[in-house]
Length: 244
Image (cartoon, rainbow, N blue to C red; front, side, top):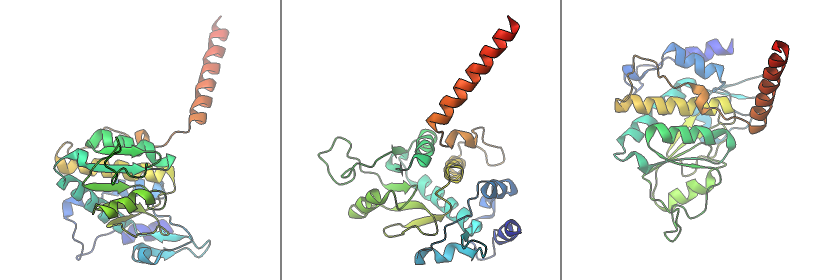
């Protein structure tokens, strides 16, 4: 029932500034719901109140408005495309769930990726070898990437952030309301942002599906991969033994 209500609020009204060509398709909404992008947390930051659709009475979790999520996602893509040099866009993810997605985003869009721990002084200390001067910053979580956001404020660097219902929005210029604590949700949002950037640049067609799957952006646990490889090797050994 909640899903039906969420789909109903995603219809764009006449006051929306998004062109009709950039409106989400039914498949996009289904993917957002499947990855539980609309689920927030039990806590709510006052600045994120306008992005909340309602609060679930059963457990107190705030439900985010997917329509506003899509609008802010398209707005972020249009801003990224406006940067002439793609390498001037810096994508950051300190949490493991977003590191693979950030690297893939940088690979397909030409942006600069900083996956893992952010080194203090990357934007402010010119003596460091890793010193960079980007024109736009995109972060996965304002809470874990707070050091990068604070340094961006020192150098007047605009910040785009994937923000949950309890995320602090200080020094954040554009907040994309979403569930940034789930690995599937984070991967899907970075995949959609990458796809929209490529569409606006004309690299891929809007009426054709993108040949890159969302699975390429999803975080993979090394231990799970090792177990899967061992299981596959054991099954292969059993097959060889059965044939002999």
